[in-house]
Image 1 (tube, rainbow, N blue to C red):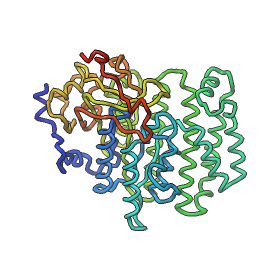
Image 2: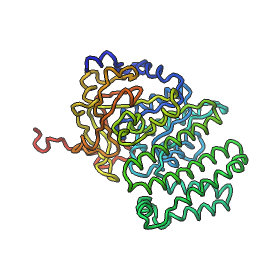
Image 3: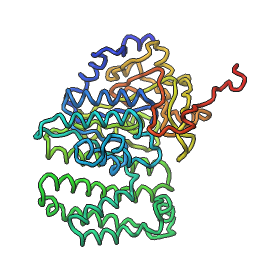
Length: 437
């Protein structure tokens, strides 16, 4: 099997044309979804940023949509458009305060955001600038606050009605999990009707709000409507948290897909045929129908993008065999610099390692005969538990149907957080400590 693959891969040597086969595959696609096999690997972030720069410069992509909270990402969007008071990319990333902060507050994202600001600044005044947007739904309270702030400026009476509706969540403070628990078990009244009614009222007044100030008003309304829509989905998500993973996973990825489509439609009003690069984890990007997840009833963003945009979508995944990663040992815990164990037998990571080409690009269309058998694939999110790695981090996939292309980087390194904790600085003790044997 490694010998069969060796003739199919494109070695990555650092040459300028390394990724030309991928650029040719992308062609005129409008949606390019670029994954990551962990939320804490430098090379995944850096390669994705490099490919995104090329797509912006060479193929006219005009937005980046990330697995990030919408209000937090929109502060970055204002910065790259030159429309904020932030003095640097690092400052513009300050709203990313929710765990895991290193996922977006890291040196690679900071440098990309700074590049994007400079790129936009060099454009002529009538050229559309490239934006940065979030697709995720965790920002319930920040999104409700954004809706109220928008209405305070444009329609104070409507703002008062929004305050009243959103006050339904006040008994639960800033913890939406508490609300979800109480609502799902009937311990308290659901806020579903309130968030839905707020979205509907905002949509009914859309035409009036938008015509007040042309494109500026249209952008502001889009921001408010997306936050109101997010509040609806987030309320449903937290209410479903205690019903099991497939329910919440599907709600989340459906929301990301709907947000992506809404963004595409919004940008098309400004630039016909807009193109978006999506940044998210492999588990969201790779078509769920080709995975163990799909067999268990889960859908994901990559699957929905293919279903809704067919020939206009390209899915790109990453893998690594070993190295280090920035991850936590539990939800809400500090970032640590952890060692990534070598890929398990019968995994794609192990198979790619045996090709004996350290870094390569594998175009997956047409490899069905070589890679037809399912294998396990590793997924490290923000938590990494190597002691239970097979159960916690591997699932079965049919690779040629999951992605259109795979980038394998055999040994990788931890992404550098902007806030380096003592645990991250010290790293993990070697497995042989204290004997050294």
